[in-house]
Image (cartoon, rainbow, N blue to C red):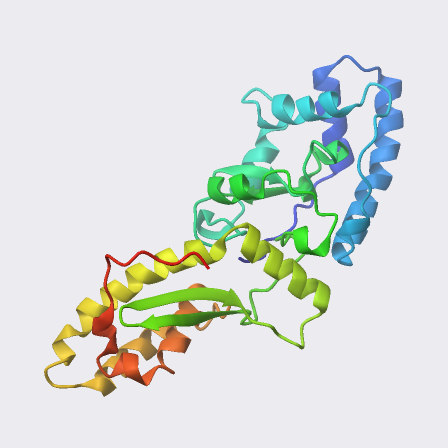
Length: 287
């Protein structure tokens, strides 16, 4: 996971542009709705900034601006290839570094997600700060989860940044054959609500499953790379190679790679030949 720059659009203007293109409603209705949305957008921004997402109220119909109308603004004028704000959609979609999903930092971004689901918070259907670039895997697992409890929240990459801290660790479940898992660190220094959000995000998006899959490939590669060191028992060479891998990811202390290499350097049994215990046929555990 990593943070990305928050869009700096005139969101009330975006709504007006979409509503004018769609029609049905009158200019007076649009003007009145602009005033309501300006307040709602400010409230959203303030509560997200202060970590108070739980208290953002759900949407209620306002004249013609009901759930159906607001959702169609998004699908027709924002996502639609002929939509008047399709350029904004494309710009937000292209904003993540290397096109990596900010929710998992692994898969490729393919779509935008409504951080607060548009079926319940439809006033934010075309609000750019509620639209997050995401991969298909994370979007499917996130679905329409209501963030009305701390243990049901997800990290918002425009407002949350855990990229500078080590919040995850790799755990050895078994040494022969090697089995591993990833889990959140119970950091007593972290605010309880932030830790609850982090754990919810990690669990609901099944990031252990994702990161373990990638780590097993890396362990298999290292097993093959270290074979030449078994006969000579060049354990210092094994240690040095792991440290080289770690050095390359020191700028990402929140990554599964950092957690993997950091833990392997603590496991002397692994360095002294235990790496050969890896069996690619062993299926990862669901923990």
